[in-house]
Image (tube, rainbow, N blue to C red; front, side, top):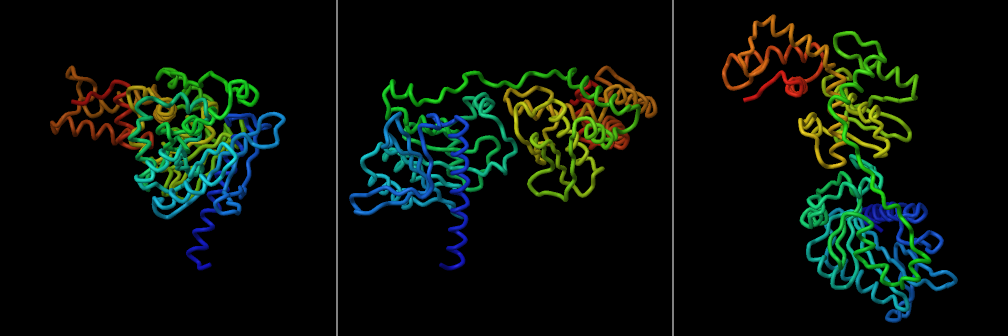
Length: 426
């Protein structure tokens, strides 16, 4: 085997292992459609083909058994491929032919890939009754969320067919929430629950049989509560009191030291990372910041953001999170987002702003600067920003001074001024 083929084989084998481990956890932790004692999962399982008069080996197989029976009542067969390019139509046709040769069982097929699919593959899968699944490595996620919260985040907008189809067919697509996107005979889905439903796995059993093997899942949905701006201001003030903050810029190292000693929080700094500015994991509890300058405006806001997730106890809703440059650009929306995940990010960003620019100190310093520069309120607000040169000059002087004082970016200052009602933009 040449080096290129060996590399392709190794990638495929690693991907197969990832899918196998994920499904094994799903089964053992009671998230498969039937209980773990009624199914077995295998790698490289073989099944006899009459056409070949020989056995066909499949990457992964899940066999589902009714109580007291030795022969499985249903088999889910999963083929795993990881290509550098899109999955060609011929591979889907070959998989369809292999699945059809497994006789004597109720067989459900899934072709799983880390790569995107050619659009022509969808019709083959639907017409032949199996699913196409694009599965992503969860270690690359911006958020890792529990299933209950994922259920809550699925709005009509986010589940549109066009978006899921884009995830399946665009090689450069990178997910933020869902690990699986699929097309099944019943339509498009963005989660494993939808795959099992789309394959109609329960139709292989009577109602009585389902009662014997079915997993009973909790019906309650996790919800991220609304947290007001005033509550976030109060929380930031409590943190500042814990480090005896008085005035000037906020020394985040004091916050880190206090929480390390009291709650075991670990914060580590690393060299710059092209994919993320920082991250937090809740088990183990650790914050990572990727920067060459720990005191830069970007690094300070990133750290304050991750501390926001920590102090807001977002570990109830996520296992880990990472923040990217584009998230900083949306650091402080005035309106609270409706989406569950977006609300978590909004809370962390708003807390970061409150922590780095304490309200009382910010108002006091701004008042001093306004008097120093002789800026008068002409009925439009403390600072009025339009295209007039005088107003632009006033804003730039005030914003630059606040930026230096609190060691935050000009953008962060502008948004804080606006949130506190000091800045009116034409």
